[in-house]
Image 1 (cartoon, rainbow, N blue to C red):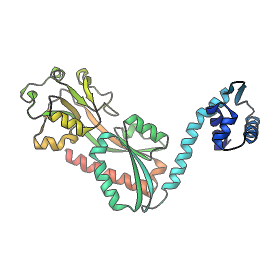
Image 2 (image 1 turned 60 degrees about the vertical axis):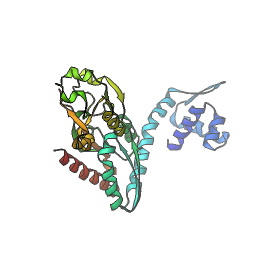
Image 3 (image 1 turned 120 degrees about the vertical axis):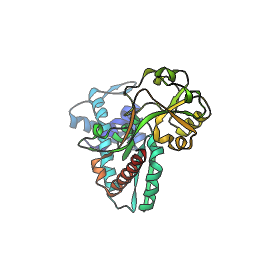
Image 4 (image 1 turned 135 degrees about the horizontal axis):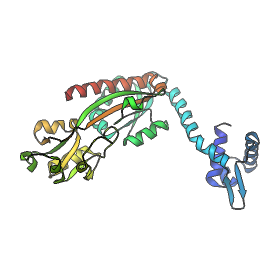
Length: 297
């Protein structure tokens, strides 16, 4: 069985008809019928039940279809590895980042990447942690950087690199009533809380119940900061994303009754990491992460 056989089974299953599958596969019906019959003989099993209303997959075909997703991912991995086995002067990388990484690290990384590579293109996807992991597993992304734990995600096939670590803080506008008040856990239930949704390394930490009572959930920190400075909202997030406003005095950090840490990591498949282009981008992320971590001390 090869990829063309899988495509045949997928087309017949999707359309439920040999004639319609012929249109998708651009082959004649006699040819398709012969290929399907030959495949069933080779496997020693019937792949489709023939009814007057159309063709329905047998348990054998269902199993093949279920496994074909993994097989296609492996083929994409091989194809991507071959494509990346080039110099820094040409190629393409597909990068996935979380919303905080997009703000804290990506501009500095891309600026240096443009200065040190030739005719290279990078496509970037910004998504939540679960979507990034799924796209990475399906070989749709070459490298992902987000709220992951390098130690938890590293395997025989995946290399993990620790990136930026920062404390989650609560901030309010400089003239907020809480700036002059005694802060307790109950205090945070008196004003609207706004924040990105808890992801990755933050999800599951010991966050008090009141902190989950969010009025607005958004991954756009520009919008969250603007709203915080123009309302009585309390905004939660890594301290680094508020650094400029905290330094200028536009935002004030409130003491939190608990300590919650945000961590990030870069994940890359080991075979991808052996290619010059991927290794170079990983190295740039390591440099920028080191600089950001030093600035947070």
